[in-house]
Structures are given as C-alpha cells and as structure tokens.
Length: 141
Image 1 (cartoon, rainbow, N blue to C red):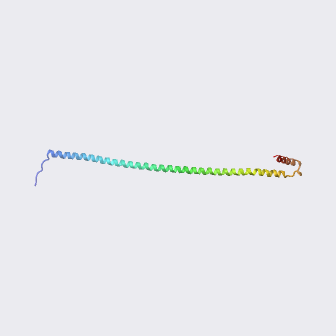
Image 2 (image 1 turned 60 degrees about the vertical axis):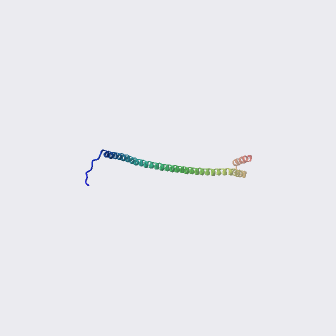
Image 3 (image 1 turned 120 degrees about the vertical axis):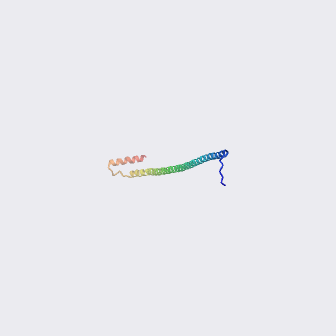
C-alpha cells in the first residue's frame, strides 16, 4: 500500500528528543564512570605495585639486618677466639715463669752446695779469700 507518511506531531517529536537527551545523559554518565573505573583500576594497580615494592623493601631490609647480625656474630666469635688464644698464651707464659720460680731455689741450692764443696787449701790466697767469703755468706743464711 503505497501511502504517504504523515508528518510527526509535536508529541512524537518531544518524546523522541527526550529519549535522545536521556540517552545522551546516560552515555555521558556511563563513559564518565567507565573512565573513572579505568582510572580507578590504574590507581589500584599502581597501589598494588607500590605495596609489592614496599613488601620487597621490607624483605630486603630484614635480610640486610639478618646478614649484619650474622656478620657481627662472626666478628664477635673471631674476637672471642683471639681473646681465648691470648689467654692461653698468657697462661702458658705464667706456667713457664712459675716453673722457673720453682726451679730457682733448687738451682741456688745446687750452686751453694758446689761453692761449699770447693777445696780452698790449694788455691792462691786471693781466690781462697773470695770463696771463703762466699762460704761464710751461705752459712749465714
């Protein structure tokens, strides 16, 4: 049926324009929220990356502290070993000195005994006088 189209009336035109306007507002709001969502997602991703970096930094800091503590412990252990070695050397030295001090009276007694056993009857008078003085000093002890 071939017919001619009727021109739109005012009500129909108004309805179409309202529908078009509301669609435009809906599109604007939708695109704004999509952009906001994309920006928000980017922000969330950036924050997640930042949190991961901070977490990695904390892990590295903990490892650094642990390594420093281990190094300090090793240093203190080495220092303690050096101190122990020095104490051992000092103790050995003291033992040697004490042994010498214990042997000294024995050496003196042997020396004094050897002086007392010297026969001065065959010596010249100067040497004989020297040894007789020594014998007298030993007897005075």
